[in-house]
Length: 186
Image 1 (cartoon, rainbow, N blue to C red):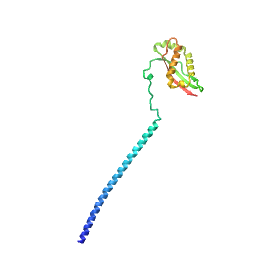
Image 2: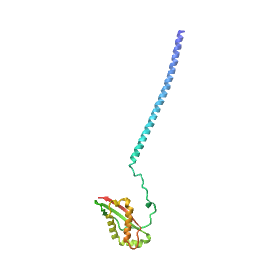
Image 3: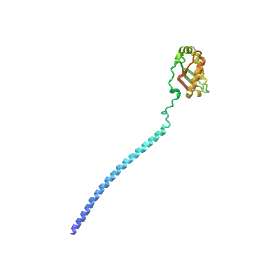
Image 4: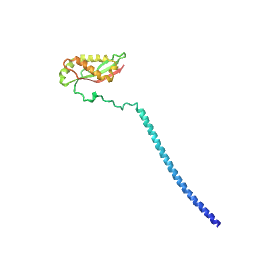
């Protein structure tokens, strides 16, 4: 019987070895699953970090970019423009500002008047186009660069309109527009 007991002990050990192999297989499977989960979590955390850094960088760089900001349209340009006839025989006028270091001014004004007055005002503008050209050139040569900035354009147009209406005797102009208006540093 001594031999049988040994066999039984071997059998017990043998069955213990088999149980140990199953635990090792289960442990290997769970370790593999854990490694995969760690990799997936690492990749997700990496993506979140990259996206966050990209968004922050874009916002910092975009603060300097004002090209996407659209200017607010003033009330003057929201209404439908009047239907005027425009006198364009004055053409392009070139002059210099009255600043200490003079800037070049290039302007092409068009003078608008009602279609009802087209014969009288149009013929008077044609007759007085040379003196009007000289007065407009003189008007701009008396201005400084500060007075010719874009935010002053409405004032310039109103002053020119008043000046031209002061010259006319048979009618009134209603509008002055610029098809070209440049102030260039020399």
